[in-house]
View 1 (tube, rainbow, N blue to C red):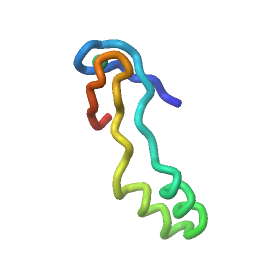
View 2: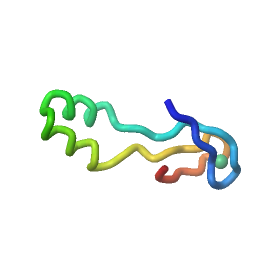
View 3: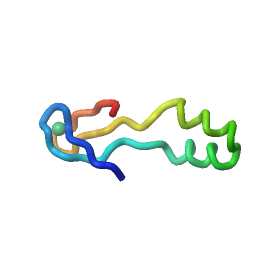
Length: 55
Ligand SMILES: [Zn+2]
């Protein structure tokens, strides 16, 4: 899991990733399922100040 720094408080937090169903769809319906990965991504959430943003 990649680490990024919060744009608000600059503390390090986990980068938001793909949802489980998106990974499953991508594998089961490869290569068309890869489109699911472009639909939406989990936003990143800072564990320190609870700021949520798209990274
Ligand atoms: Zn923060």
